Structures are given as C-alpha cells and as structure tokens.
Length: 149
Image (cartoon, rainbow, N blue to C red; front, side, top):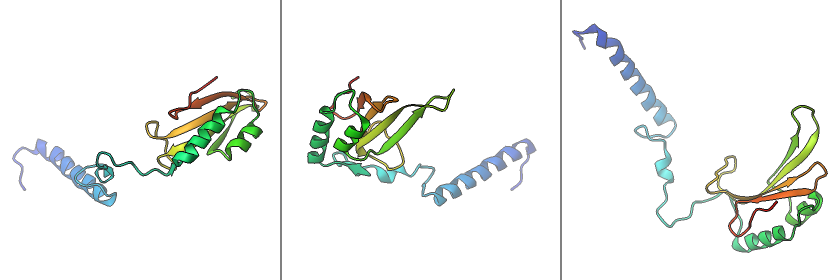
C-alpha cells in the first residue's frame, strides 16, 4: 500500500489498529460486530424474564401480609423472626465517630440478578432501624405494599 499524502498515513493506521483490536475483543467476549452481546437476551413480547429470585404468588401474598402486621417501633429481632433472614443487613455508622446509628435490612421478592441491582425489575422491602434496633421506616417497591414512615 502506497500513500501519496503521508499526512494521512498515521490516522489510517490508527483506525486500522483500533478496528482490529475492537473486533478481537468483541470475539473474545462474545460480541458480534461491535454489539454488546445483549441481543441474545432479548425475549419475545409476553415472555417473562428469568430472575435469580422470584417468590411464588402464595409466598408473595404471605410475605406482604406479614409485613403489613409489623408496626413502626417493632424490634428488629421480632421483625426478622416474622420474615426470616434478610437478603442484606447493613450497619449504619457515623463518619465522624465510629458509632452505631442504625441499620438497613432488605428483603427481595424479585431479584433479577444475584450481584446486580435493577431498579426497574427488582422488588424489595427495605426496613430502617434506629440505634436501638427499633423499626423507623418501611420502604417498598412491591406493588400492593405501601411505604410508611
């Protein structure tokens, strides 16, 4: 290949190298023609996505009814006794002083991916407890279960 205008040689070589590199990486990671590989995950309309965790309808109704019975001010111990082990239990502490100020306890009814959060598809109930482990707030993304202070 011969170039009459040498000022174009470097940009053309850079483009060629980048194109080969992107193509090689795409093949290595299962991408085709620069696609992100997500085209294989597209489901026909009406087909439900497969979730990592999804409670059955009966389990869902039972869980919602148990949550509704838990009053604000209830202890974390009683809450966990009624609902079982949570998905996550995050201790809250002050940045200024390393002291316990509360905790966030989360239960999922639908969890799309095990290690990823999906705000559109995941459904959960988040319980906020104060420094005395008393329930202060219930935040819900579950249809049919309202959040409450």
